[in-house]
Image (cartoon, rainbow, N blue to C red; front, side, top):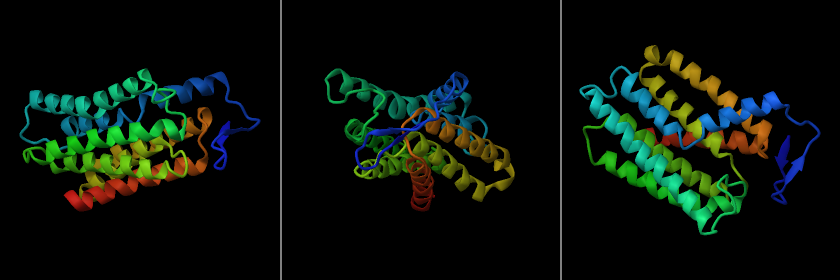
Length: 225
């Protein structure tokens, strides 16, 4: 396992090396639950599983809402990273260093805040969605600030945000949120374990990312809901 040295910003290699099945397991979870994809899963849950978040919306309107999120919170940030790599501003699209993460954090923050503004100005959308997106913006800002000092885990921030948001909903409706919350807790553990297996993140960077994601969702809920 590789753990980042907080002083030199270079990985420290430990004796344990993940096996091929471990790498496949960890790699699959890291891709499927990449932080850019988390908003799609969350809004899909709100649109089609949550009992009342999108009450009054037709199936077509629910799908259009998901497409808006995909466009603003997934595609635009992804394209920005690819363009940054193409023009040489970052060394890798995997953003393995703190330096590579600075501009993407800023670009994503702009897109996230824009998405929050769009949904906020259209009151027919559920406040839960607006709160979640504002939490994403706060989380990206927290990640940018933390990146000054250490390479906080983006995957952990994403899963922490998902978990934090479901905890917010659980406080409002514990009956309908028991199994979704349990599932997200399980997925959070699997994703964070995956990052420890195949990335150069330390436990500090994982736990801090989780905490940042959870806290920013609670902060967003206090501001929006």
